[in-house]
Length: 288
Ligand code: GLU
Picture (cartoon, rainbow, N blue to C red):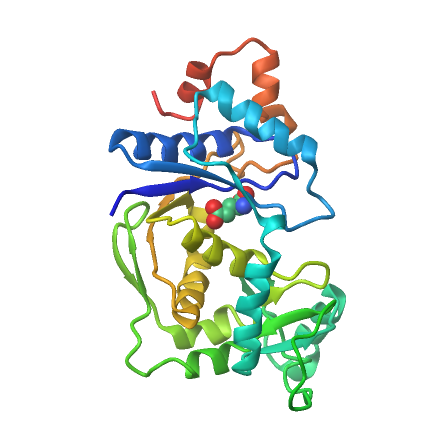
């Protein structure tokens, strides 16, 4: 099987040093062993994605000397694929519509009768379950224009008791990573698999897209390590292969904070405009 990896930026702002590091590591690993390197534009957040940012991503990557081996995949082109996966999960009774706002969730999670402190997972506050048990009339089709959550407890219970929850990690904690799926009910909870404004969510699309692009090795920042457990569960539910994962270190600012899209000062475009060369960027992120 040919090694195949990808870089999957969202066109919601400028690429910064952290993105450059991620793309250079993935590209470097692929090129070192004659593997494939692909690009994916993660533009499901239609309120924040802009074609102009997408173009700047191509410009910055070209400038860094990064080449990709197929036309980029764009998530906004893939709604039929996401819909059919949602249909399948809906038919198995694993999804439910959720009309809660962020505020509803914060209020319900901190209500005194809940007894415990609100718990945060990879997606923020663990969903307190307000909409989970609302009756859904039999024969109801996959609803549109409403967020859909996956009932984590039910989803895990639908998998065979012998299921192994694990993935191979070659980055931060090398070795097989085994986890207790049952813990995900309290540490992750009922994740959103479809947004109100888009038939899909980060977690759903990333596993379907990695599978369709034939990704054998997912190379990305260690901030997504915990999310990988969610991705493994989705791969098991959807009958997809789990690739190998390589979570790399994060590039931080002087204060030790992870770089964010709003850190324009560290945007690749800013360094380019200041006359820096691609080698300077490699040096700055510790690749030379
Ligand atoms: N689009 C995600 C980001 O920009 C990357 C997701 C991934 O690599 O799985 O952080």
